[in-house]
Length: 199
Figure (tube, rainbow, N blue to C red):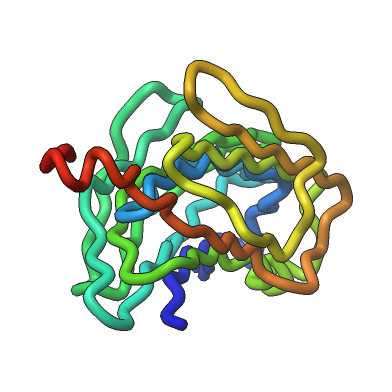
């Protein structure tokens, strides 16, 4: 079984020997069986008395034909688009600057093709920050034509709205021991539609 890996691994070059504090993430996944759309909000803080500049690297999976496109990075705190550099198929890098005792909110989004019946978002890289996330929220949206068959973390709740199934996770003081894994299967096309050539 092939898996698609989504991850946030951030390596920082810190001014004045300080390090940005990555303390929260809020991520929405939209899965249709062929692609995964990821829209994430990442919260950073500068708890020092001096300005801070960090080089942030956001990697993409490189295995198989799971191409990534529609990449966007936006600094919501300052209301401006963030220029990033694409490192081949490996990921992107961009610079985050924070004033003393400042908080930054960065939106990162992209779309990725899926090659099989599972998708993974890497959570264990949070350990590289040497502290748990104060809060993490995850939402998974899937159409009725898709059936979820398993998760590495059981959803806190699920519900349906306008033909979509929504699954929700909420964690506090979260230092993940495993990654977020979604398993799914596509429901079969009704026999009548097949005979009639329906889509």
